Image (tube, rainbow, N blue to C red; front, top):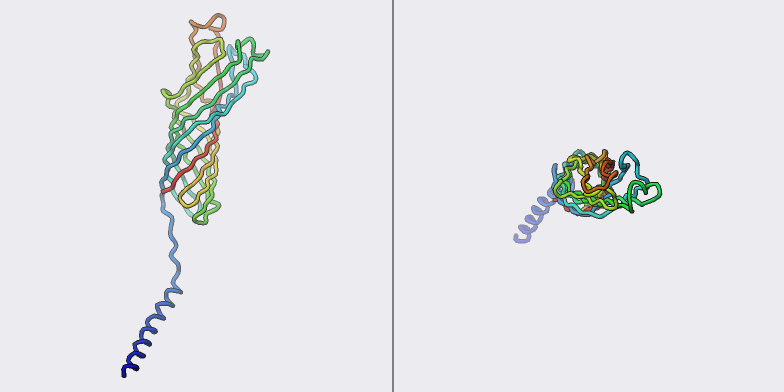
Length: 245
């Protein structure tokens, strides 16, 4: 009697377990969906070149301008909107300190305009806001790779921006920038889990210089009557490391 009862209980448990097992095997797997919005932070270094197209004094163009790269730094907070499939939009707010210089050799062609080898050193502090479209062409968790592009607007903080002119006849030269600057950005991002590396290049779209003045009283004649004009754009290569939350 005991043996028969145990056998019946065993058959009952087996019959109850088998449907559950079959159901679990036939049920579809649940796919984790990406959040509609992600936020993150990043920081890194930039190598900027204030590309000078033209520099003239008294209407005469200076030759052989040498645009030099300098290293700066930045930090940013960003927000990413995950769109359909591999597409996304990303906005950022960053604090940037970019540096660059322009060297001018005292060649025979420039000897009547500058007394010695001249140098323009620039440090620009700005708040930047790009709007980027991105596409993930590798999206196999935890790995990913994407390219992105888009416009960027930058506000130059005048009080934390400075220029140093040396090697000119004109004294106490001061360059003013347009407060708002526009550029185009393109780059590549690689991520491992929620850690990512960002490489990008920025091209300035217009002349960033608003005006150049100097102290005419301290400048000897006839150089105190000559207007200084410069056209240059901010080109920038940057690398950053960040975290997506």
